[in-house]
Each structure stands twice: as C-alpha cells, then as structure tokens.
Amino acid sequence: MAITEDLRKTLTNPTPLYAAAGATDLAAEKLKEVPALIEKFRAEAPERIAAVRSTDPKVVQERVTKQAKDAQAAVQTKVTEVIGTLDTDLKKLREQAQDFALQGVGKAAEYAVKARETYDELAERGQRAVKTWRGETAEEIAEIAVAVEPEPEPAAAQAPAKKAEPAKAEAPKPAAAKKAPARKTTAAKKPTTKPGE
Image (cartoon, rainbow, N blue to C red; front, side):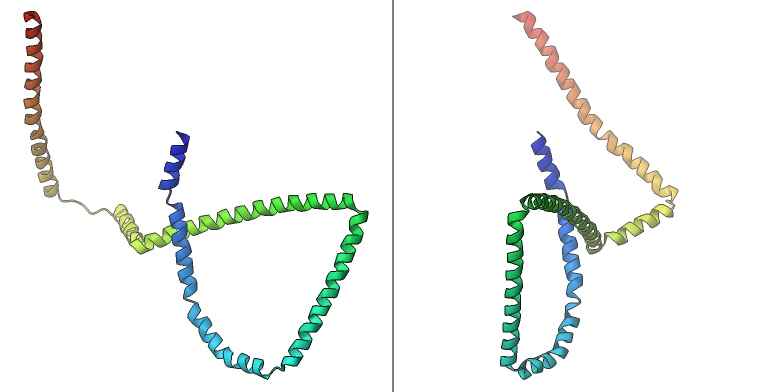
C-alpha cells in the first residue's frame, strides 16, 4: 500500500518537470551569450594563430622536457617521503585515514545539500518559466485585478439566471416520479406471489 502511494506521489509530482524546464530556461539564457563569445574569439584568433606560427618547435620541446623532468623529480621526492613516513607512523596514518573519511562524509553531505538547493532553485525557475510560456502570469495579474475591483453585475442579468435554474430542476423530477411507481408495483407483486404459493 505504501509503495503504491509512493509511486503515485512520484508520478504526480511536477517538480522534476519544473526542474527540467528551469534547466532549459537557464541553458537558453546562457546560449544568448554565445554569439558575443564567438565574436570575441574571432577577433582574437588571428593574434593567437600568429603567435603559434612564430614559436620555434625546438624551444617548446625544450620547455616541455624541462617541465617533465622537474615534475618527475618532485614526484620521486614525494614518494620517498611518503614511503619513509609509512614505516614509522602507521598509527598516525590510521588516524589521518579516519579523518579523511569523516571529512569525505561531511563533504558528501554538504554537496548533497547544495545539490538539493540547486534542484529546488531550478524547479522554482522552471515553474516561473512554464507560467511565462503559458501566459499564466498575465492571467494571474488579471485575476488579482478582478479580485481587487470586481465588476458590478446588472440586476437584470441575475434575474433570468434564477428563472432558468428552476426550469432545469423541474425536468429531472418527472423522470424520478416515473421510477418511483415502478418500484412500488414490483414491491406489491412480490407479497402477492408469496401468499399464493
């Protein structure tokens, strides 16, 4: 029973659809900025291409080789330090591992909260976007305006409506009256057949 209720709630909840609409609206907003970026890249492209063409491949190769050797030396020293401390401080490493695990759990919880907040913000944005797309915001404003200043209805318009309602109500009564005698006759036939048996 609880599973069907959960499924019903999940399937009737519009929040994921609103979140998708919000993400779509945000993406559309960001896509409007793309033409400006393309123009910027077009303006900068000739300079960058000229800079790449003017560089000497040997200089670039020497620079990359030097950086690779420096990185390798740094990694070797770090590995040597870690191996040296592994043998001496096993207890300290266990404590650090536990601390890192707790920090990881804390970070995961923090990211989950941020993800939920972002999801809710996208859902709210999507709901506003859907209302805008449908034109419901204009309808809501019109409804508020009507609630603030309702238009007075003429008395002549109310009087014919009251006369039409009783005519509608009278039409079902004859149908109900026809059914009632039919029930009485069948009820009357049953007692007469029992004494005859």
